[in-house]
Length: 503
Image (cartoon, rainbow, N blue to C red; front, side, top):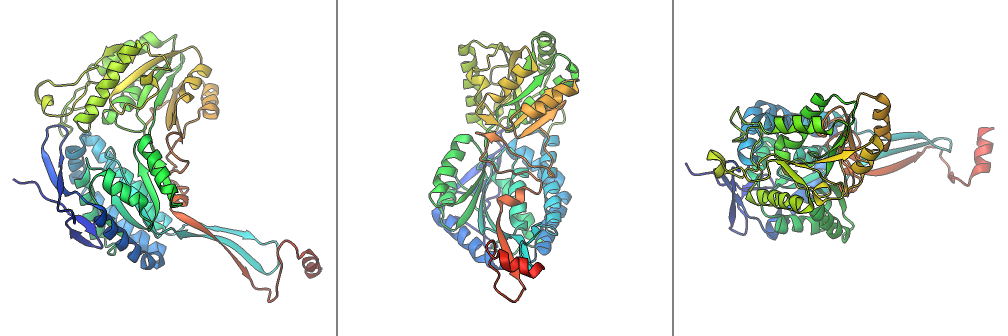
């Protein structure tokens, strides 16, 4: 059976690219062709942005509770298709089915949360310093939002960006990752079924170097929300700044789990395995460093190596699989390059350290779960994002040293501390400089009702993933004064008149 050819979605219609070119999406576990997509060009981007701009004036005046109802309908349709979408996610992206279903569930949760915000969108009401005067601030939408999303959470991360953008009254042009575009196509079908008006949500597939760059540079795009590598995020920020465009960046991580000598070692190991090797290490919050107290290092490393050596690799749709493929062969090659770098720097490969090519694994992009021992905190494998199933073990002699090592990277997304001492826990809560911190849990597991994001090279200060603060990314603040005194009141200098009025 031939794989389906998918089209762009512009102004409520499915259309082929003006370029006349296509590209394919394949299953990283076995090379299966998932679909053929439009390889869009600058003209397609212009068409999509124009459609979003034309739809904006009407959409921003659509009552926010009504916008929220459409988002809630998306959650209902997505819930009904959760199994179907999860299986497609596993086929196109590679993560094991339980994780894929979790990806879909996070989008459902985000839709329900943001639908609730449609009946709040809280502003500010404060007392004026003058009599008979009303002072308040309200939220205004920005306009056209360009959402450039990654492949590792192809349903959840677009939900983080698009639902708050839409509930605030913005229109969207979505450029999904080229490794997972079929999932985006299916999501747009759900938006259609939910009843979104033409032009409010538009989809353009193609390369980041063409479609992404055109969106970032387009003068009608008011905000670019991007999740991806720090290098690309930096380039996006520089390019957008030339047009005074807003940018929200979520980028890399080099996350650590700190394990103290009073920790529950078995609990810590479970958290480490899940955080380091879940999604094959392809999460921005994945644990890539263990900073372990020297008093318990041997026990922890021995138990961890024994546990990781038993992890089962394979197609994520198989119930026996615990670790799926990495996204493509290029990613596997990058991971292996870091294995060689680690060896050259003096680290010891405790387990793994090579491509996984046994039997059916040879058809896909698999890499062995890998643990590096004897890693110094200054080594490249302890400082640079690998984005794969690679874990470095670093020894420390105190909580203070562990926190120092944790904070000493160019990234600041997520961190974790295992300890049974409440005082140590609160020290870490005070001194760890990451955007997320977990106590006695791994480095992954954010929830939609709280902000998600990091410090330093992980982002530019905005927060996504949930909580009311995410709305600030997608809104302008408008301050409004209503004077019903019937006379001119000169704020801040009319003190005598004010005193006379009060007497």
